[in-house]
Image (cartoon, rainbow, N blue to C red; front, side):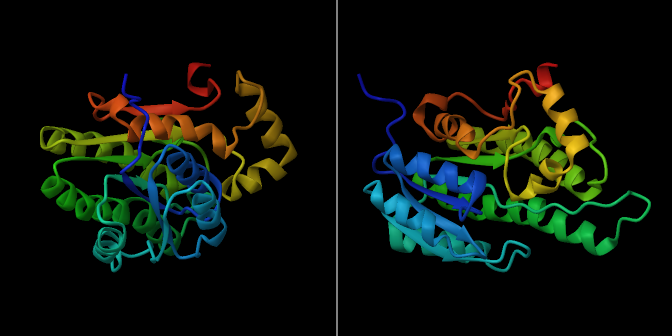
Length: 251
C-alpha cells in the first residue's frame, strides 16, 4: 500500500520557520520527504541545517511578513529554486498585549497586518500557482483565540478569529480547484510568544489547571497534525480547524 503520509517529491513553504512551531512543522515535513522553503525576517539557518540533515533540500527565503510587499516573490523564489510549491504553512505571527482601553492603533495594525493580511495575500499568491499545478495544501495556524475572547490581546484575538473565518472561506472557494485549506489551532505551546504567560506564576498555574493533559504543549506536538493536513491522507478535509490543545477546548 502507498503511504499516504509520504511527502517525497513535494515542496513546502513554512513561514516563521526559524524557531518554535514553524521550525517543528518544517522538520516534520522534511522528515516525511518534503523539500522546504523557510520564510521569514530571521534567517532560519538552524532549521535549514536540520532539514538538510534529514536528506532534504532547504531554501532560506528572507521576507518581511509585516507587509504584503514580499508575498509574490516568496512563491516565485520557491518555485524557481525548488521547482514547485505543494504545501504552504502560514505560521508567522506576532502578539501585542495591553488592556483594551489602552490598546494602540500601532499595535492593532502590526498584529493584524502580519497575522491576517499577509496570510491572505500569501495564500492567494500560492493558490494561483497551485491552480496551474493542479492542486495543493494550505495550512493556517489559528489559535484557541479563534474560538475564545482571551484578555489583553485585542488585535491577536481579532486576527486569529479572522484566520478561522478566512480558512473556511478559502476552502469554499478553492476546494473544487484541488486546494485543501485547513487550519491548526494550537493550545498553550511553550514558545517565545507565550514566554510572558509562562513566567507569570499565577497565570501559568491557572492555565495548567485548565489543561486536561496537565502540561504545556511543545512545538513538536504540532508536527503530526501538520503532516496529516499536508498529506494525501487529508484529501477530503476542507475548511477544518484542528485543535491541538491538550484537551483545553473539551474542558
